[in-house]
Image (spheres, helix red, strand yellow):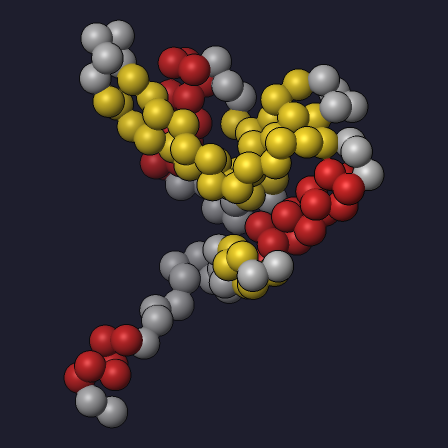
Length: 116
């Protein structure tokens, strides 16, 4: 094996997640791919709409300075509950994620829901 081949090898995920492809979209984990399949079915049934994958949320401070950017796994409108939902599929909640979740709630007023 050459040095170039060695560098091209992908490292295993730190938390054991396996990348999965569904509908030509690569998801970071099997759980995220499963949630996507369920969400697409709910969209087909007319329960949800406006499904967005990897939707970015920009958190700005009081003077307009960038604090952080958070990318949600899924964002959509839930017609049954009549509300906008932001979902993140997590096996392990890291300290960085918990902080970003709190910042999104404090500055944008958006509750990020965690699905295991």
